[in-house]
Each structure stands twice: as C-alpha cells, then as structure tokens.
Length: 280
Image 1 (cartoon, helix red, strand yellow):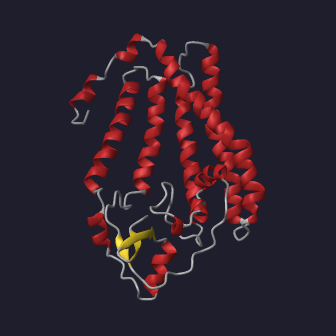
Image 2 (tube, helix red, strand yellow):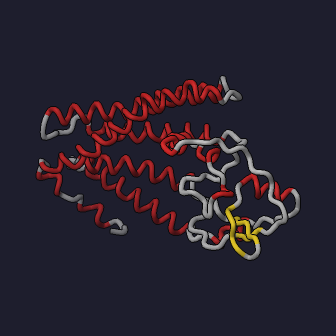
Image 3 (cartoon, helix red, strand yellow):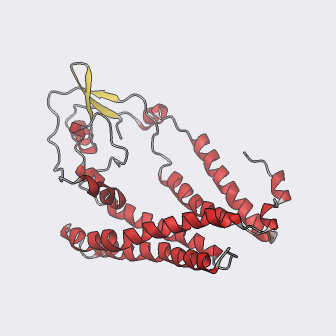
C-alpha cells in the first residue's frame, strides 16, 4: 500500500510490491516493522472508526423509528439507508488497514527481486479489472512514483480477488434489496414507480447473475484462468455491468425527482430519538 519505498542515492524511486517485501524479508535484506509500529504510523484509530460506524447506524435507527411511528420514509432516505450497508461493510473489512501513512519505510538494496508478470492492458480495460479485483496484475510499481488509487496490495499468486468478488456481490445484492423497501411507496407518477421497481429488482438480480460464474470459477475451474476471459468477462461486461449501471442511475435520479411531491408527514421528526445522544 505504499508503506515501503525503494530509495537509491537518497532519493525515492518507486513503492515496493507485496512480493518485493516478502522476498526481501526472506533474504534477510529487510526487517519488517511490527504491528504496533504500523498502527502508530496510521492516521486512523479505533475511536474514529467506531464513531463513524455509530453515526452511520444512527441514521438506521432514525429510519426504523420513523417506520414504527408510521411516518413515511422518502426514496432518497431509502437510498441513503442502502448506502449505510456498504459503509458498515467497508469499515469492517478495512478495520485493520492503515490509512494516510505519510512516511514510508526506506528500502535500499543492491538488487531488487525480479518483477512478476504484468499483463498489458488498454486504458478502457482498467475499469473491468478494478471491478473484478484483478487490477494488481496490470500495475508495475517500478513505473510508479506512488501506489495507484485502486491498488489492493495483494499477492498476485493468491486467490483473494475471487473471495473479494463474492463478498462484494453479496453486499451488492443486500444493497439492492434495501431499495425494494420502497416497492409500495407513493410516487408522483405510475411510470416512476414502475422504473423504481424494475431498477430495484435489477440491482438485486444482476449481482446474483454475476455471482454464478465467480462461484463456478472458484469451485470447478479453480486453476484455469482462461475461464475468466471466456465466460466471466462477457457476462459481466457485455451484459450485466451496463444494465446494473443504468439501473443505479435511474434509482439515483428518481430519489431526487420524487422530492417534488412529498406528503406533509415526511417533514415530521421522531421526537423521542432526539433524546438519544448523537452527532449532528
């Protein structure tokens, strides 16, 4: 993640990959820092992460309280509620991840390990690899002055991207299911209600469709990367991904367009929730 940087003649050259650090450590040319040292370098602590999660969950409590009181929840609030699922999931999986490390460990060796194979790619393919978690195979850190934004820092020889894809698709299905809570809501027009319903079903069903080839790849063709190019790529890019993006855009537009016609009860606040200590 950019925590180790190769220096030559006192000047930074490029960040080191996971493979570089492991190889240098095995050869005795690099003494890795302890867990405590890594936590000390990180700009994020348990308190700030906990407060962020509690503030996110506070919105969920308010939404549940409105439902108990019989007050309506707007479509925009439903979409915000769905994003809380993604936010909490992100904090859970990133709980031990260092953030905003300002100073890297300087590594000065005579010869670095040979780089792994980097697959060439066109610029328009980068989005696909970011979505599927295979972007690290297409990044050569020796040509970078800093770690790219979506670089995961994983070992290119492991199968963690597959497991990450499964978790991401499951989270996407839950994210879509939350939108279905507005199935029987009042909309300004029948067309808008129909678009919301179709789009909500789409962002639940499409991740499920994309999950099938990932599970097959993991279960049946575990050692055949060609299957990714022949099945997973066409299904995700040529069919599912554009439809999913379109459905998300429709829902985003509807969440704001429906604000033009809200019932008076939508502006009422649940009074008893104001007595619970929280940040505003």
